Structure formats: C-alpha cells, structure tokens
Amino acid sequence: MLATEALMGGVYGELKNRGRSDEELGGVKEEWLMAGLLHDGDYCDEVPMEKQGVQITEWVREKGFNLPENVAHAMAAHNWHATGVEPKNLMDWTIFLGDSLTGLIVASTLVLPNKKLADVTIERILKKFKEKSFAKGTRREDILMCDEKLGFSLEEFVRITLNSMQGISSELGL
Image (tube, rainbow, N blue to C red):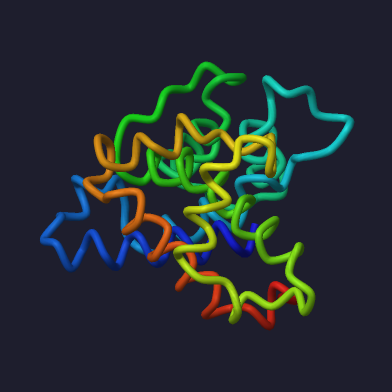
C-alpha cells in the first residue's frame, strides 16, 4: 500500500507538471495519496474479491472518518474487474494500472541478491515485464493501457513508479 501511495504521488506530480487540472485529475494530491495508501486495507480472507476496495470505505466511515467519494471510487476501481466499478478519471486509472506495476517492481527487486530497490533499473523492469512467466499475477495488458489512459509510454510509467518507490525504499524495506 505504501508503494501504491508513492506511485500515486509521483504520477500526480508528473500530470500536474504537464498542465492537468485537479478536475481532470479527479482530485487533489492528498486524495490521490489517500487512495493509494488505503486501497488494499480490506485485502484479507474475510472480504470476498468483489468487495475488496469497497469494504475499506465502509470500515473507514464506520470509524467516523470522512472519506471523500472520489477516493472511495478510486479504491473500488482499482479492483474494477471484480467490483464492477469502472475507472473514470486519471486518479482511478492510475491506481488501477499502477497497483499491478508496483507488484512487478517489488518482485523484480526481491530476486536480486541484495533485494535493494536502488539496484533496480528501468531496463530491468521492462525486461521482466516481457517475461510472461515472471510475476505471473501482473496484469501486463492493463499496465500497457498507460499510454491511452494516462498519456505515458510504458517506459515513462515505469520510470515514474520506480523513482517514486525508490524515494521511500527504507519504508518499503527494500
């Protein structure tokens, strides 16, 4: 969840630098970060797949916290194929496409002898991306939608995500 929070902040910053408005982005930076941090807070055996990304909103609101509707939508959309909640804006698409990419980057790191994100390169991630047998759960076809949905080439999306994760490598333990 920390990796996805970092990704969300990195992509938000890049899109802002490219002139995107908060309306186009689907929210402000704090909302993007919140969605990234909380999106898998309900990932457990007790929550069925079709509720993962939805149940967390119910839990947070039951505890009396305000959770903006755009954040709730983004968290549900990250698991779109199971929840049926389709991504609508750049925040939704970023969490949907990026969640799987962070997993690929972690997997690519863990197979290194020293298991350090600092030693992972864009080229390594792109090579592992092409290896269908590596990190089989990675939704490669979804990640490839980054150009259409976010305006980033695959290499740009990997760079932004990797740099964002490397910026918090100590918190990730990598």
